[in-house]
Length: 405
Image (cartoon, rainbow, N blue to C red; front, side):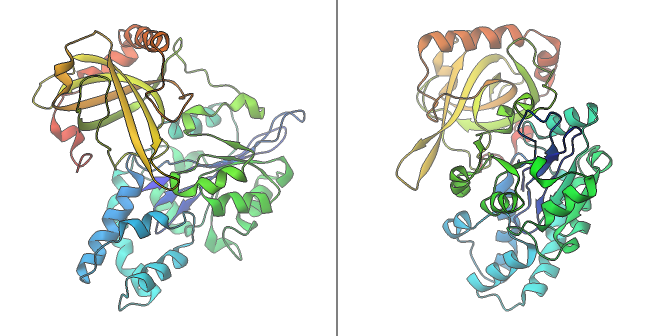
């Protein structure tokens, strides 16, 4: 499941949109109004909110469903499909592509209970919950607008603590005459918040969402997955991760949760095999959303260990193998300069802090001075209570079960 937020803010007050895609399991947009006329009005922010493994959760459900009919998921085909479609559009595409003996409505009726079983275990991506709490604490009104049905939006966000109560407006595609890429969802959400559409900024991850925002005459910040890179040419601003979002650039109150040069994040658990020592590639983990990108730090330990024992800095980025294919790259450095042989085995990572975005999508292009600076930040931070507490978590394969298949 993946989810991106959609935010709309009025001038001088603020509001927010968040959108969820039914079949694709995406929460997509968030809209916010801007506070100051001299700033670009904040519109909506789109980001993965539902889970640490967005695309995978969706594919697992579809894969299990197709298996019941003797069909096999075409991973390449699914990766090329557009995000942000309505429930019926997605259902019709799957029925057609796999030759299922069902109508789109029958498909929806059968697969929805399978999705519902996943919703209670969803987990917000880095930066999503942080942004919503930040806006709410500063009395910035926000609304959720999604191509999902209103009933399903409520079912999904009820799994996220506080979200249902914090939104000023929650709007589904069944409450307007047409969903995205038409502008009606955004226009109606802005109307209910008392915000002029020209005073809105949209943060989106899908091409249809970006087009809808543009049609509604809103500014757009894109945080796209690799399958939605066309967003980049249309959006006013492009981010690789929601952790890169700077509210003050849009006339909103700045974040106040940085600890020195480190940002505490909800823990990210990973498990993988490091292949050539402490600065080489880790095998790609398909469960990690595209929008997890940047320089992180935390703890590492061998799979058979009983505690998080090694402080590490981890760069997560991408390498372009061709015009259409990309490969996730990881670079890991031990803060304590431990024996690199420690990493030549199956290891687990517990990332608890974020330092910055990567200057390059290739995480290996970091000079020695920067690496030492990152190590210093990590080492200092990991001695502080808000970071140390995570290291008390039991290190076991259960913590990362399902993340490295």
